[in-house]
Image (cartoon, rainbow, N blue to C red; front, side, top):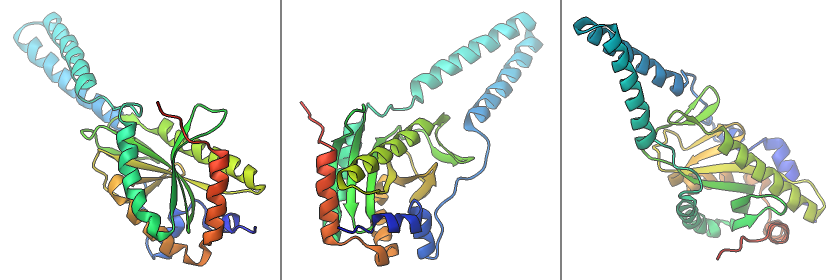
Length: 259
């Protein structure tokens, strides 16, 4: 069977930028700015200096130094308890459940979703493998601490002061192996697009490409695929091609066995 997946992906790169061009728009791009970790420590330094000068004025430098040490220790302890990042393992089932509901709505538009697919030989599970008219997508569902802002600075994604580079690399790795194994089952090369769906923090964009990964706010999942379908209408996969890809994915990526 002659699939159009390779031709479509070569003409479209990773997908989102070309979708924006097809709509006469452009996807959001990371804003340049100061690393939030540096900003946090600058504020600590300013406050510590104010504490030192204030205590030294009334007492002496020894008491002032002690006050600064106490302040810094209390500040670090407070931040570690109140602003810790929710690790992916903590609430991944909640995020997956949210995304499953949204993907179910896309069945009518020709999209098929396979959930919790194991990558053989690797300690990794693709949360959602989606196959439809616009191509193949490996989606990683994440639920992070809503108290911390989600920002793209200098080409990297930050959740509060924490770099999400490892999570982006994880999403790219799953897409790579998904393409490798499904392509091997079909005897041809394929392109699987890495996507990360984020719940929790407020997101100022609907779709942003960071390090080759489309980062989507949880509430924009359906809109993301609708726009992709419109932008790639001339290169849609047929119903037969989608069915063959899904069958190959089911063979290559077994479902996760849950207790």
